[in-house]
Structures are given as C-alpha cells and as structure tokens.
Amino acid sequence: MATISVGELLVRCLKAEGVELMTGIIDGTHIPIVSHIPKYGIRYINAHHEEAAVHVAEGYVRVARRPGVVIGNPACGAGNMLAGVVLGVKQAPPASDGTQPQNLSAGGRV
Image (cartoon, rainbow, N blue to C red; front, side, top):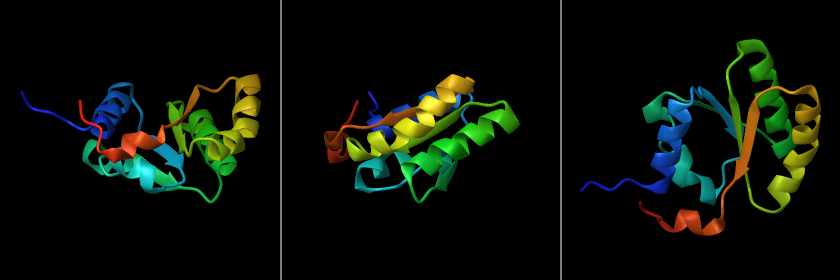
C-alpha cells in the first residue's frame, strides 16, 4: 500500500473542494503542505502578516467566487488572523482559515 504525507493529503482534499488559491506566511511547519501545492495547481501567495493573508483570501472569494484558504502559524498566527476572520464572518464570504500543530512538520505520514 502506498503512503502519502499528511501535507499532500491535505492539498489533495483542498483541490477536491475546488481551492485554487492559498495565502499565508510560510514557516518550517508549513513546508509539508506548501511543497505539494504546485503539483496540484494551487497558487500560493505569501503575505507579510496573517491578517493581510485573510484579507487577500477574502478579496479573492469576493471577486472569483471560489473558496479561499489561509494557512497560519499556531498560537500568535491564529490570533493575528482573528480580526480578518471576524470581519469575514460578518460579511459572509466562504473563506477558510487554518493552523497546523507543530508536530505535523515532523514527517507525519498517513
């Protein structure tokens, strides 16, 4: 039985849901995810701040009418995304945000 990484599985699921754009700030914990994005045709926009990444995804959702995904760091990154997420929820675009636990970058396999 073939195994794939958790990062690749997540990217496959995002692609299956119609995701074409992901924004966020790349750090070491995101490499297992971001390294698979080009292979599945998802565009990644690196932002300078998590809140800005949320607003980029929100703008994309409004213009393209497609799902937007934001990836952020646990703890402070999630807190930084909060302002954009709250605003987005009030205005109801279908954007999604997420953080990943630190141990995922340790080579988690499915």
